[in-house]
Image (tube, rainbow, N blue to C red; front, top):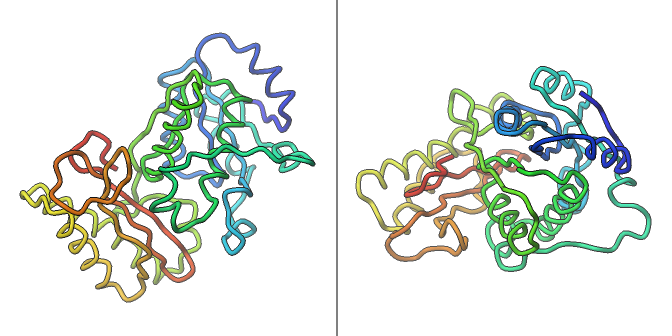
Length: 283
């Protein structure tokens, strides 16, 4: 496994890899969710490249860019047994050299949900992912269902810009109590950690109602909010029942696959989660 920090070296080494290349872009501080993507890539491709880069352009001015957990040595030790060929860990200057002024933006899909809450976030995501795709030239790229809107936005970008690769979205990996794994979970105090699984419980309650025949989008929102509002430490930012392709909020009866998603603050930590109902991408 090689650690590479420059684009020129990455391209030189990448050009010598024969066969298919799977790519897993990450911001590091890896957990089992990330590692499940790496294992899937190793199963399906001849070579695996993982990027570790905390991308400044997807963080807002008041967000946690400086505090975001970083530990490259730890991440390398977790990746070593998984058959990864290259870990690409560039610097900010390598990714955004002086004079940088070009951005990639998906317009409509980024106006809602996370895009409405985090202005400019997805412009940073699509820009850095487009750059990484150009650098790595993968055959397949792997993303987690936990960041459902991100995966939908990136699929749209890939289709619109004719990137010659396949986007593979893998199921959300959860803790035993249902909490979706996230690097930001490390911010939680013990008391906050006990409250955090209410997100998963809210989604499960809505899913059970759906399985029992409930098809009212408004009622499913109410069910999720009832669970979340029962937790004093949870501050709900949004709860959504949206079309799983367009991300447009639904008002009437559910007739095709829908994305149930939410963002909740517990203390200073902002956590997201989702599931898909009526489709195959259940998180």
